[in-house]
Length: 238
Image 1 (cartoon, rainbow, N blue to C red):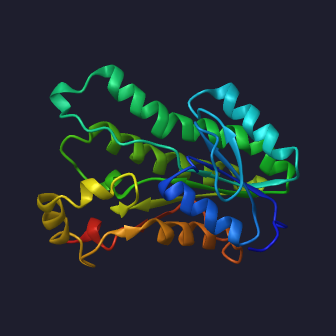
Image 2 (tube, rainbow, N blue to C red):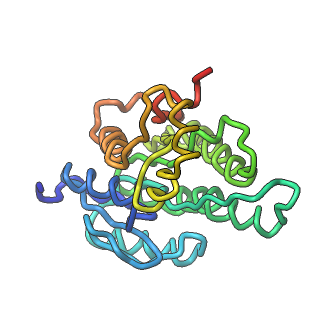
C-alpha cells in the first residue's frame, strides 16, 4: 500500500460493507483515510467513533481529521435500510430514516465545506441508491431519503462550484456484503432478483469502492452534480 500523500478523505460508515471497501480503495490510492463509524473501527485508515446524526460530534470529527493535514474529500456513506409497509410506517420511523440517510448527508456536506475550501477545493461523494428512482413496496422512507441525497448533491454542485467543491452521487443497486449476504442467499429473493438484474449477479462492495476511488483520482474535474448508477442495469431493465 502506498504511503498517504494526497490529503485526507473522510468516509462515514467505514467499518463494514461498502464503506470499508471505499476506505480500502482510497487508502490504496495514497489518500489518508479517516473513517467514521459508531464503533470507531476503520481497518484501512484512522478511525474515529462518531454518530453522524449528532451535529457536534460530526463537526468535531472533521476538525480532528484536519489536524493532521488538509482534508480533500468526504464520502457520505453511512445509512440504513428500513422496511415497513407505508400504511403502518410511523412518523417517528420515517423521520429516523431521513435523519440518518438524508439529513446527516446535508450536515456532513455543510460541515466539511470549510475544510475543503481551506484545502483549495475538493470532492464530496454521496452514496445514494438506485431505489431513489423506483417505487418499492415497504421502502417509502428509504426511497425518499435516497432521492433527497441526489437532490442535495445537485444543489451543492451548483452552489459550491465557484469554491472549487464538486459533488457527485453514486447509486448502487444490490451489492452483496457481510451485512446482507444471508438475506440475498434466500432462494425466493435470489431467484426473483436474478430475473430482474440483467447481469444475473449481485454487485461487489469492491466494485463500488473502485468507482468511488476513481472519482477521486482526478482528471474528471468537469464532472459534478450527477448521479452514477452501479446496479447491473437493474434500474433500467424492462
